[in-house]
Image 1 (cartoon, rainbow, N blue to C red):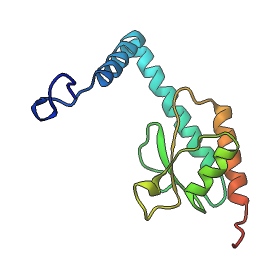
Image 2: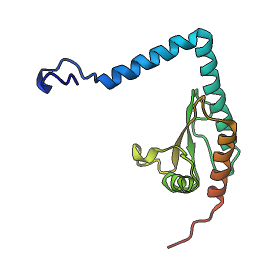
Image 3: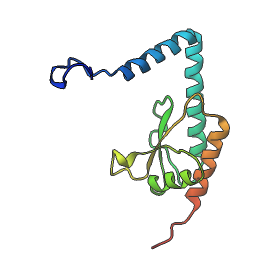
Length: 142
């Protein structure tokens, strides 16, 4: 919001911070150039494809939108609670994704996984290995 104008008279809701982030993005893309931007996008897409393949190999895990178009994030349906999975991953030092039941309460087992050009193949392998271990753990009745 325009900080120097009272809320009811402001004509926009753009903060300086948002403008600076947009400026940084524009500068980064211009420094990359067309070929660099394409290379960056290809690295993002390649990481996504690898992550989808590795997670799809785990027994009990499905990808509800496997055939759909994705860039660098996708949904994984887990055999148990996504919140439980994220707690387990957090305990081993991995940020595993976003529990979609926070937005869609009926999708308690859905996890949104995101990768970037900075995500290494080894990190994807580690995520898949830990999700496989978590998925194999039998829940104990209380």
